[in-house]
Image 1 (cartoon, rainbow, N blue to C red):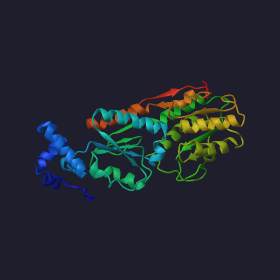
Image 2 (image 1 turned 60 degrees about the vertical axis):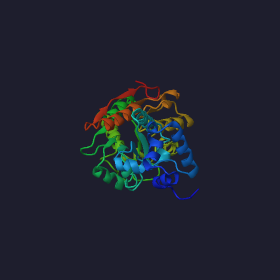
Image 3 (image 1 turned 135 degrees about the vertical axis):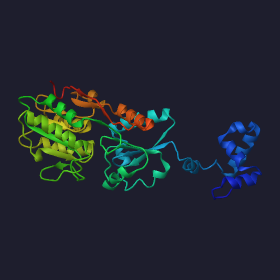
Length: 344
């Protein structure tokens, strides 16, 4: 068997049949007798030939049935994030029913040029980390749906992050709960957890984290509470490892905070773990509020007060908009989940 990839024309010559016969054996079995088809497939397998080039055929037809799902960060991080995986589940289920396939693509890449010719379009889940890739999205000529951020003249799926954060903060604020710390997610261009202090915030236009920050600040202001930037923390990734660093330092500050407003449930659960470790009582000594509504928060004790965004439904809706070629954006609902960590 030759180490070079065989072309259909060479295979047809070796078997003394037409290229159409080879193609029919792989793609249109009804055009050949079962005996002849099996003989051709067996001969092809012996040669190391496994069918016509599907990628080339897709390019000729202008359709591959593959949709690129651009995730905002590195793939190993995104596939471990429970909120992202729920979203991907919703997209995958809807596309599977329609015979479509997903190609995962990291938002840390420089360009979509490597895949744009081989996909039918893009679903972009969150603003990509790489600003160059973000700047390319408005110029893509293929269908695109954005999630959790907007591009002009492009359909999107969002929730009202500011309102959700605002309502969750109001749920937790009480007369004696008046010393807040915000454990934010990706507010700075820094690879480590740190207080915002006097550093410049990044990506305010496309960032859901900044919308949540706006919501928290609005709720605090309505309660007559001021919060300084040194009480707002940047956490680069929604992981226990980064969150525990911020929580440990925030809880060690003087005066000790009486409420932690956390931009993800993972951050909130890590903060609760640290609070309990140092002997604080939840909610007697400190209130904790999360964001996302992952199942783990309701299995924890005390249960987590949080915002539930329906990520599977968000994925389904994004896929439906893509399949239906809709131009309309959708703003989905959310639900405030009371919990023992911040009782009403």
